[in-house]
Image 1 (cartoon, one colour):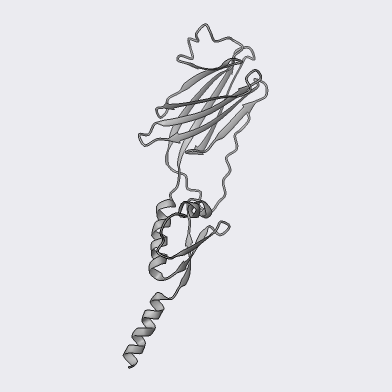
Image 2 (tube, rainbow, N blue to C red):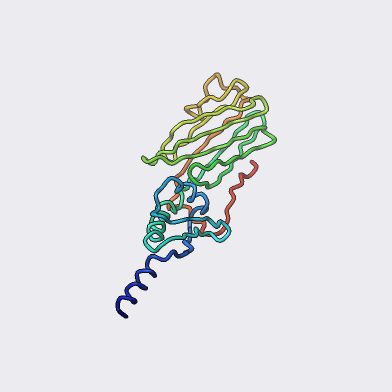
Length: 211
């Protein structure tokens, strides 16, 4: 009788709902929770606490173990890209450069008031280690223009910015006749960073410097 009671208590302890805080090391917890919305978590109930950097799991032990395993799949540091942006204005007699390291799919913007140009870059690292660049240009004569293209790692692309739009320039040292001296020239070089972004629990904000 005593043995039966002990076995029953043990079974109840195993099945009893529990609450566990699962640390999230690389991503905002609520963003992972949004990705898990349509997944079957074996009955586990999850709640994100972004301030503490954890996901709170309620459920029995197998459900919590399954939730912990699933969360680890999404809790991965994002890959990073170093962006170098050079702007040349012949008429202003200026060549300025700016750089930043951002996560893949994160937009970064830089601008210069003297030349009168703004460049926004959103790089995406592809499976073949090429980089897709999603670019937005604006100038004193061009309200806004969007360009997207795929380049190799560390490959420089050159653009001329005019009131008629954006042109890709093949050779910066030999500009074609249709590129006017008043058109700013922008060169963009993405370099895939070694390793991944790992900010832990320290909040990070990327701010583009002014050229």
